[in-house]
Image (tube, rainbow, N blue to C red; front, top):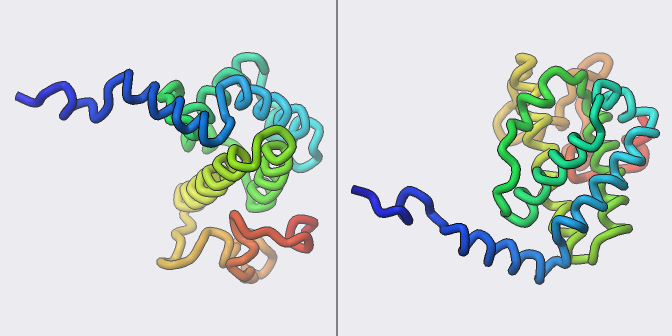
Length: 180
C-alpha cells in the first residue's frame, strides 16, 4: 500500500511553506495578485482588441476571484484553482493579435504593481501560458504545429499564409507586429 506522501507528493504544510517562500522571494501574495488581476481587467475591458472577448462575463467579481485563484496557483503554487483554462478559452474567437495584446497589457500591469522579482516571475509564467493556450487552440482548430516551431512562426491566419519570424511569437514582441 502506498504511503500518503507517495499519493500526495506534498503535504498541506509543505505547500504552504513553498507558497510562503515564493512570496518572500518575489513579493507576491494573494492580495498583490488580486490587485494585478483587477488592474489588468480594468484596462483590458477598455482595450479595443481585448474588450470584445470579455463581453460575455456577467459576474465580474466571480471572474476576478477565479482568475486570482488561477494566478495564485500558477505563481505561488497555492493549489487554489481547480478549473480548466483550455476549455474556458475554446469558445472564444482568439487570434494571434489577442495573445500579443494580452501579454503586452499583462506585462505593463505587473511591472507597474509588482516588485521586479514578482513581475519577472509572473511574466515568465504568462508567456508560457499564452504559448500553451495558443498552441492548444491551433491544434483544436486543426492547425497542427510543425515540430520545433512556436505557434506564430507560421501564421495561417495571415493573408496568404505568410510566415512571421519566431521573434514575433509569444514572448518576443515587436512594436511593428503589435500594431498590425
